[in-house]
Length: 336
Image (cartoon, rainbow, N blue to C red; front, top):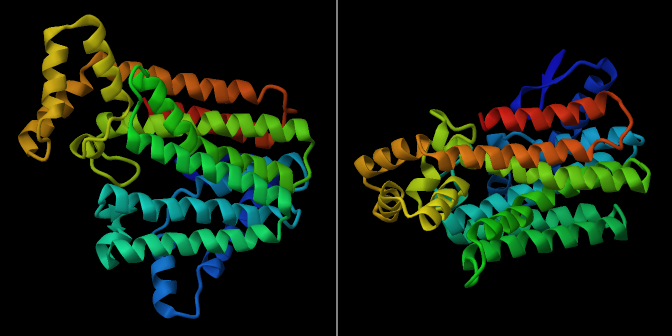
């Protein structure tokens, strides 16, 4: 048994283990190659987050999905590099929008070099991803373009907020489907597609990735409130302090509007206050951890993870399918 990938995924099949490890090593090499520039400053900025590490969740899904066809097909590793480059590029842009100071335990690019360099470095990574895509064929370009459109749409919807009359929780889940689910779904799609898997298999794995991606983000929402040490490297309550309305907060506000309980309304008022104050922040975190809204958010996370698991049912039994099921279990475990 070897532990690979995010959340300590255990691979018990030697052949699968060898394929995944070899693939992930090749992806890492591809990331460094793709982020090189003739201009040393650009190389340093582009490789800043590559060197900081990360779960490499999306490339891992490419490798596992490729097991349903030919995992050694020439397009598998490049497509994994594409999805990770795209993900990294969005992190550069997100950190500018969120005014984040730290990413993956190091100074964010915008903190180190300023917003302009951070945005342009993200654009540079998108350009390099597109260059690789061009060699993978027009279908790959189309799939990536559609996913990127969904990703950007999700970001815009998050920024704009729900329209009048729209349920905030439904709006938020749509945002996550675009911002996170779309690229995770493409990771699974590319792995199956590049390996030459049957179209029905490609569709199944795409649906799985969509649901897993949303579950993955919802687990992060729960962890931001519930954990003592956040897996992403952020301290607990970071989203809370920054006023980002994650699912536990939305579930609280939903309950307050529906039931009108004084304690719920008071907690909502506390969340609307200045949570850069450490005392208020600690009190808000304490109350949310004990509130039924957090448990509701956990149930939402489990529901999406179970939907991801159920989507795998038509696939043949094999070590790769077992690993994909384990990822569903891992997401649930993260959410407690």
